Length: 261
Image (cartoon, rainbow, N blue to C red; front, side, top):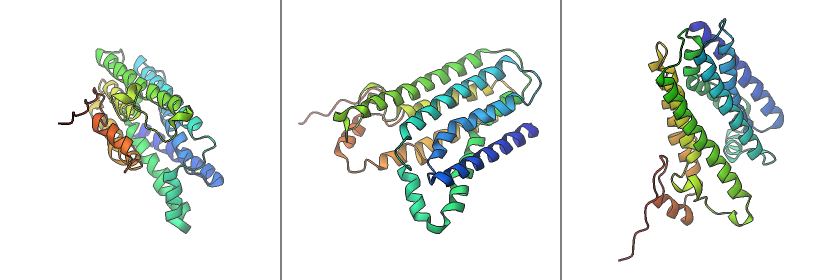
């Protein structure tokens, strides 16, 4: 097990350092968001090929991660293309002043590398195991992954189409999946990692991989996802009305507006 963890950690360190150097040249730290998905693909591939031969479960979890990582990286790249540095990273660049280079390396790229390793733990566990044969738990995990993947992909697509309409400028997306949750893409992201954890439960020590979905759920709900994004809409009356009737994370039917007495 230690060998797989060390190899994965080394690969992530080299990868994130390379991404940092590119960001340094471009003066755009937000490229780390594009690099997020491919980082998991890297972990999946290096651990997949680290052992001689493979079982169906190794192939299953690696394919799930590759499909998710490619879609996410493509989406983020196309969304950010030509827009310059994301507002979050631009603010940190301004706040950090002359310390922007070392702090970017440690607090953006290396920190994301650490989270990447933690969240990819079930991938490492599965790919280092010798358990053979798929089980109903693998199927359940795959189904949960598919549900999460569809929420994320469809939610992102619906928002992209909405933003392309001139009449949507300055407006809030409230239709499609966004009618049932204010963040279908974040819900989907968390859901698919819970599905990957279910697959990891089929191998020895798989229970410990629960740190993966717990971490990504915490990040999405309390750190870089829901909380940070909704701060942008503070004071926006349209969003406040939307938020009062729409579930913040888990999909549910919208609340009916209260009747005036």
